[in-house]
Image 1 (spheres, helix red, strand yellow):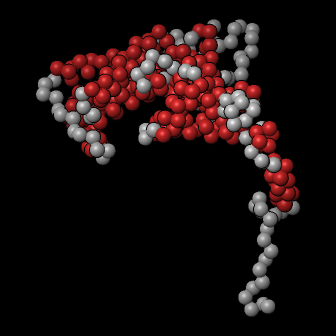
Image 2 (cartoon, helix red, strand yellow):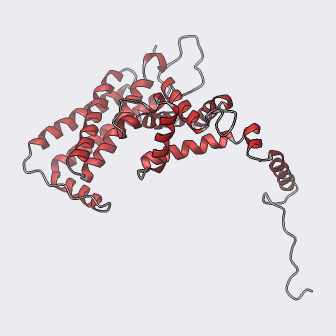
Image 3 (cartoon, rainbow, N blue to C red):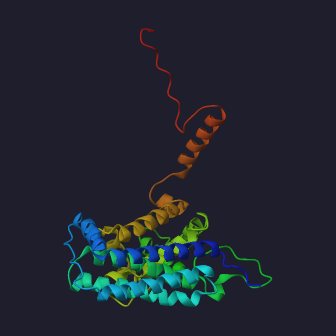
Length: 312
């Protein structure tokens, strides 16, 4: 009997949500093509995008409806048994990737319509998600071998390599501190933090890392991955993402920077290098704990009661 994939329930749920969404959106496109464009134009107008024109004929609408029917069926079929039907994931990922990529080309080389940007971001995110689920459902990673206890949940090799590359760029050995990210074990600590966030922690972290790893290809049009860049290029790309006006680029960098920093500054050697005396904080925390046990409140000393007005 085949052992179910650890995330079988979540994968079934995700693909059923995708199938339902594709069906509803496809029907809306087919029944209200001009209204759909009007809604997207109104949304884009809030950000200064010019309005996209309506279709003069319905030929492309027929092709688009056929495409939505195909991706709806693919997502529904995958949702029945994700690990067993994983062979259907690459066609779905390819369709969404081509849809996203062509809209990006139209956005750059034709005209900056909001409808192009929206489809690039939405279908691009779906393509990355589907490709990631195809990776994690591979037979070698779906379950432990018979007679062997399942291992502790962890990131896949590519996700871990991306996290390590980002950690090394954040805290290189011999940089601001003598100890680098590898010496301090920051990758393992942040990975353990993601694992502690529940069943969605590691999958969402893997999805975020896949998005970050694809930045050179998506935004610099280079056939490269962030994890394969040299240290200098990696740092410049992460700084570019941190300054980006797009939250979807900026937020992952800021979150990883915070997590890596929190784990790095807990190291005594790093704390001493910045003049931080951990013993002082620990003594204050111990005093606060004693105060709470004695019935006091708050982490700080209770101020002396001031005499009432007229009681002097």
